[in-house]
Image (cartoon, rainbow, N blue to C red; front, side, top):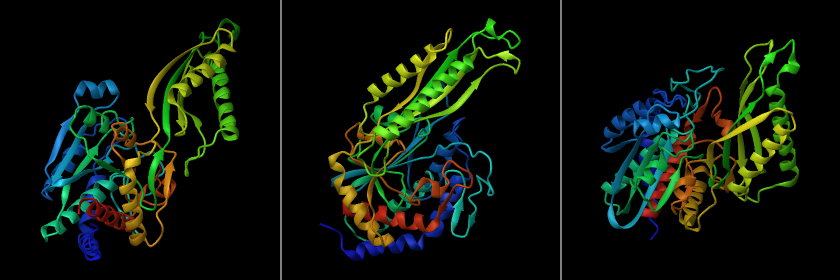
Length: 416
């Protein structure tokens, strides 16, 4: 039975009455850095658990073993689970947001760890992606339980999953919690933006490519083998693939266009008067949902190897850094999608479309375990509007307020 309109209105009123408290909670989360790398994120988990305890929420602290974390290239990870059980007979809905985030970089006009509010926007690294949804999900749950305290029946439960490994692929965040058997919810809502609900996303393959030549004095270049020229051949081949992708490969998922290869990092050489003997590149290959990761990786490896072989004396080593599979929607996500679209339209006053995204997220790890999931939370229509991963990342506070109402209403519809 769908809850009465009066109950949804009471949820909205509770969120409005406690919104200043929600904003202050988010400011405190932004003020604790979680730059990844280096990924020393356990202190943020401790601070989050302390703040949650102030609301009467007991956060289980699940520390990933130190050696696993260091082998992964990070410093510390403590993932949090808050379990809120209601009456028997309903589903358990998990709400997941990640606290780790890329370093601020340059160009900020606001303190990246200040949580400063200007013209209705809260500024700071992770203000939008995705510490905002620590607040969205926490206060949606609090609103739900305030209604329960007034006598509204609830069946099932809510779990808050606050994790710290999204930037490196999620394997030591949600992946680790699921692998350890610490959680197995019936549904998942994961951090996203408020003006659309996401049900599919790209996959991502990241490779480290080491191009080997023979170092030599620049005055006698023929005595060496220029690794940088080999790297240029590899890059030209990779960028040539991008032109082919645009012309020949298109996804049928709204919001997703075509595959793409990005050479995001390159290092090599020893001095200006030395022929480079080694060049290292890191590449990122985005995979549309229709592609198979095994075939994609085999093709990229073949392309790199053949391009390097076109330069006499050049060889390459290829090491996989990350394989994040694409998200394809599970049929069981329909109740979540329908509830979010309904309540999103009512709260925002505009239709909430169902779409895909070219990003990759931790949601794929839940769906791989058969857990129907959607991506929805506080934020604008696009990543670029929020400046996520750029200078002056920010969150429009009206989006936070509205998304909190939509999530709370969705929980009430699913559990009430």
